Image (tube, rainbow, N blue to C red; front, side):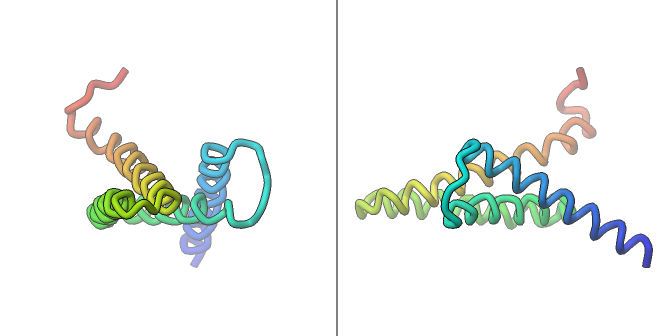
Length: 114
């Protein structure tokens, strides 16, 4: 029981920290309308999920490929705002997923520690 509460506390704390970080990276310190909360919310939710459940990284990479393919298709149909939004989300997810692979790559010895 105590370990479940501790895990829930870590999960919520990680989500809040990643949400604030993604919001600052995306929009800076400009606090505006509530529609700006969607992208940081999605990124922090997916980051929290793959941080606590690492086997789901493969599915997130599949989601990245769908987002980037959808970006190209919507660009061809001249839906530039939607294309920009989906492409930004896909590329951000790609960077988050790759950065969460670094501990595994270092542990396997492919990259030397500093």
